[in-house]
Amino acid sequence: FNELLDGHGRSLGEANLGAHNKFLAHHRALKVGLGKYTLMNRFTLGDPALRPYPKCQPDVAQVARHSFDKANITVTGPENWSMVEVHPDQLKEWKFEGSLFVPVCPGCAPEAQWCGGGYDAQTPYYQLVVKVPSNAKGVVMTQVTYNKDSKDITVEDSALSADPVCGQYECSQYVDNGNGNDWHYVTVTQEEKGYKWSNRAGVSWMLDAETLDIGEDCPYHSQGRHNTPQRTATGLVTSMLFGGETYNRVDVGGPEMAEAKKLWWREAQHMEELSDGSKLLLLPLKMIQYDQKEGKLQSFLKSCTFKVIADDVDLAELNKIAGAAERGGGRGIALAMQNRGE
Image (cartoon, rainbow, N blue to C red; front, side):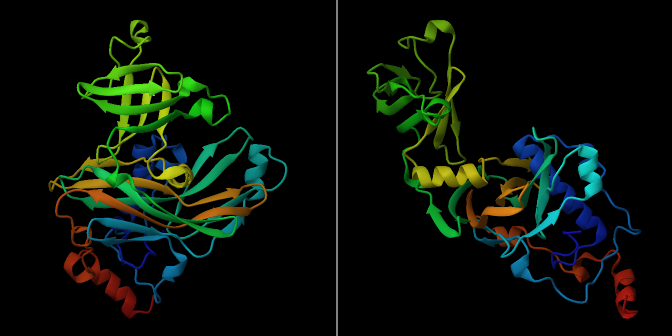
C-alpha cells in the first residue's frame, strides 16, 4: 500500500510489482532469506489495472523518497517516525513478557529477523529500485547525513580520488575488540612487479599485480592461504580477505565514513539485467537505529547520496514514470470511480 500512496498514481498491478521488487532488493543484495510472510504478502483487489485516485496527495516530508541528478541518487528520510507497539497477541505467541515497538514510516519496509531475545527484530529499510544504463558497474556512497544523539552528522567520501589498492588496512575482528597485534596493521604499497604487504611487525611479502593474491615469499603460502580483495564499482579495494580474516581499509573516507557505512549501508547492491538492455539496481538502505524494548529513537538517516558508475547517465530520464493517459489500462475504471466520488 506504500506503493499506492506515494503520489505517482500507480495501478494495483504496478504497485504490487514495485512492492515485490523492493523485497527482492533486500533478498538479492543483503542475501536475506524471503520468509513465508513475505512470499504471502500479495494482494488481489480486482482488476490489476485499476488505478485509485486519492483525493489528496501525501505529505512528501513524511515519506521516505529518492530523487535524481544526472548520475546521482539522493535518498531522503522522513522528518518523523512513529513507534507502534506490538500487539499483545503477537507477544503472547512469542512468549515475550514486556513491550516491544516497531518504527513506522511511509516508504520504508521492515526487515524482520528472529533474534536471540525470542522475538522478531524489526529494522526499517528503504529499498532503492532504480533502472540504470547497461554499462553501469554499480554505485558508491559519496555523502551521508544522519542524526545521532540529537546531533546532525554529515560525512563525505574521498574514495573517488584515492589510490585503488595502496593504503592502510586493519584486521577489524581483532583491532575493534582491543586484541590487535602488530600483524593486524598493514600497509600496502606498489612495487615494480606488483604490490607489497607490510605489517607493523616488520614482515612483508608480495601480492600479485592483478589478483592481489599472496606470493611464495609469504610465510603462509605453504599453508594454502590466499588473499582476495573486495572492490567497489570504481575498482577501489575496500577490504581484503586474507586466510579467512578480513582486513578493512581505513585510510579512505576516514573513521567517520566507515562508521556511517556500518550504520546505514553495508555496501550491498545487486543488478539484474532487463529485457530492454538496461539494468535494475537493487539497493537496501537502513533508515534508523532504535531501542525496540523502549521504543526510543537512537539515530536516523536524513539523506544519503550515491553515484552510479556509468557513462552518460541521466537517471531521471531513464526512470521517468509515464502518466495515466500514456499507460492506459484501467483508466476508464479509475475515471468512473473518480466521477462517482469514490
